[in-house]
Length: 80
Image (spheres, rainbow, N blue to C red):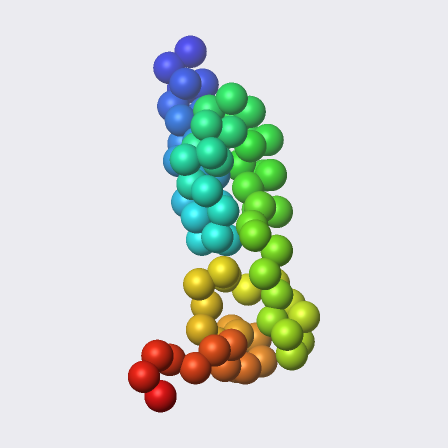
């Protein structure tokens, strides 16, 4: 019983971390991990805001300033 509770808690934390790295709300995905366990963790891998690079059309982090795939600068830094 204790192992089951610990594994669901680990799924909740992992879902939160994965979703945060993909630009989604980590609190929401923590809750989804608690409720859905490993299924919530799996679903967190497809979470995100849907922002994509205008050059290569691949998904990127919403706060990215440069595409990690094609190295396109997404906006100029302030002050230039």
